[in-house]
Amino acid sequence: MREIQAEEITSAVAEAIKNINFHIRPDVKAKLQSALEKEASPLGRQSLQLLLENAQMAAAGILPLCQDTGTTVIFAEVGQEVRIMGASLEEALQAGVRLATREGRLRHSIAVHPLTRGNSGDNTPAVVHYHPVPGKTLKLFVMAKGGGCENASAMAMLPPLASRHGVGDYIVNIIRTNGAAACPPLIIGIGLGGNFETAPLMAKRALLREIGEPSPDPETAKLEKVILQRVNELGIGPQGWGGSITALSMAIETAPCHIASLPVAVNVECHSHRLAEVKI
Amino acid sequence: MSATWLKLPFDPLVLRDLEVGQWVNLSGSLYTLRDAALKRIFDLEADNKQPPVDLKGQLIYFVGPTPPAPGEPVGSAGPTTSRRMEHFIPALIEAGVIGIMGKGPLSQSTVKELQRKGVIYLAAAGGAGAFYGSKVRGAAVTAYEELGPEAIYCMHIENFPAVVAIDQKGGDLFEQGPKTYRKEI
Image 1 (cartoon, helix red, strand yellow):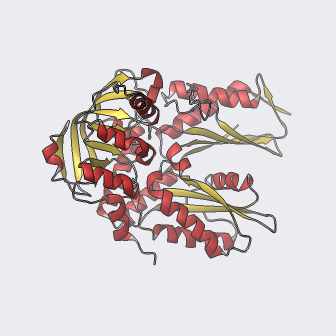
Image 2 (cartoon, chains in turn blue, orange):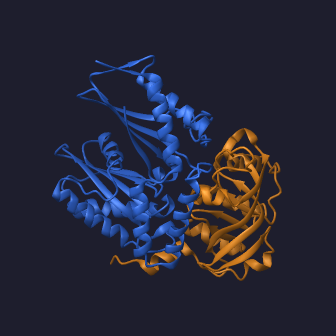
Image 3 (cartoon, rainbow over the protein chains, first blue to last red):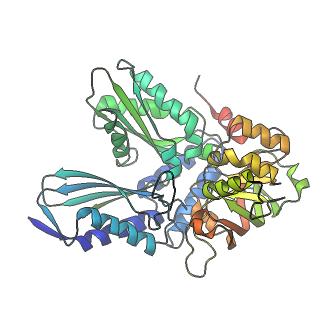
């Protein structure tokens, strides 16, 4: 067994959360720059320019990229030969969120109850998904997920024989209806197949992929390309002000499903896309 | 980008000339509002009580900023989704608000309501929180401090750029913009 101290996890998580809130990912920056070259709308180009300027200002470490510093979502791949000392993994992760919120002056964005709406005051609890994996490493994907784009997300149980086109129609319709309010240019994660609870989880997992990296499955990769093009043909554009770049990327994850079902989940992500990978 | 410089609170007369898609550069004072504070005001209105702020002639900015760094008035302060506030927009208009600012489209019925009353809607760039935070020169909590980021602030802004999204002439950027670039059949 390999022993890892809980404090080490806490401080690594806190560093990651602070980092992603102030520093734009290189893949996102590159995509925004190429969008700036391709965008047909002058207003769209001006808004992209403003986002790049925003990223530069945030990098000074005083003002976060966005005032919505998000819900912390963590995918934890826990090596089966790892033993965590001093606290539970859950406690270590939540302590990291608390520390980052204080040190990074992040906004308190979590309501403790969906109806009474009291604020937790420290951004806990983070949403954590645990996956046991072989080995001695603890790998964490740490994401700060904005509320506006999460609100634009949706899922449906389509008829099982809905074609590729039918799946595309559903996704394109969601973006047509919700995309402009979700801070485009968007990053879109799709979960196709699985069941009622795994499809949205796959959609979120799809967001962990490097921006623009196609699915390893050639058929799925083709579908990603086709639907991304359809989304961009909507004309929503950066900020929803009209333009040719509505989404920067589309990533689809698939899983087997029941013969009666075809679940599809659309997880919409804004252009800030605050995500880091931490290995301990 | 060339922009029209506007002082806040607005001279209502200047609003007549604004056109969809035009950049404006704002300087002066405005009030911030979002979900929780609006709900409180709305509940007050239901009991025929007065809102804690006189909103007459004001620009309302839908925002929930991050906490300030030491010595700074505010942290990041970009716009939040306006659609969520739609339910309260008639009440805001009733209270005398003459402009609202946020991000994203509004429904057809709200667009019509705004245009009927001559209230303009400005769109700020969503996700540019650091940029907009740097344009805030002063911020004081006016009401509901306990709501944290959702408190009502009086903000003093300088050189704050936004795009006219709904004008008094019947234009709606979120309808017209996408129509221009739509390619799907």
